Image 1: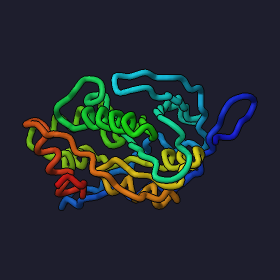
Image 2 (image 1 turned 60 degrees about the horizontal axis):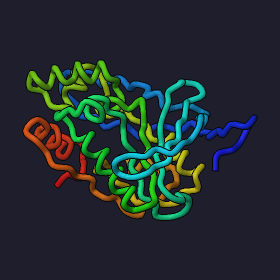
Image 3 (image 1 turned 180 degrees about the horizontal axis):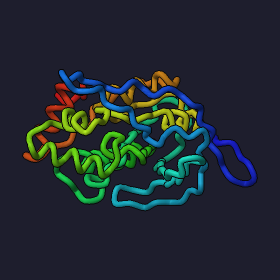
Image 4 (image 1 turned 135 degrees about the horizontal axis):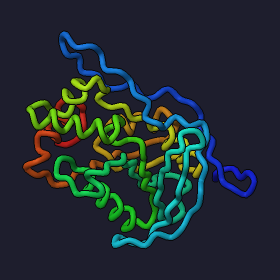
Length: 236
């Protein structure tokens, strides 16, 4: 469990090199600039935990705050999570999809499906990773990328046209938090092979990567196809 200091819980985070960003070279265009996702805190403080009843079932919500960045994160847990084969979802923050129900992505339905599966399992963790908006480029830049996509670019080329990385996310915080909870191996709900690779690199065994596919719609079919063909997501 997290160490205790002055009556508060603290999770110490080691500085780790982020998983390499996916780059698709575009002739005549400068390489994208790496952006800091705000997830490189050396210490994460657990502010408090409380019961969170939802339409999917009862969770325990754990609020964390980065000691240096000030970014707040949330973890939802069910049951005793220490040990092997813990069902987990590392969900990147998506305001447009998770809150406003945007049809441009699959994030909102994926979040709901993860909560439903963890509640049904009776044991698991959902890590809600803030600072990951737009694959780490931020909310405003994501809206700018949407405008470029409306003009014909796909989600990869839109990021590159803005001078952004295709994927600037860092999962070191999530892996270290799992270590602090005594999680040794997981069943990961994700279509993204980079998430599994990040956990393995950090010493969390991924015993199974469970495809986390939700129905597509006319607005996100091109987006999902791009994630499959250009980013290697398991969406077949």
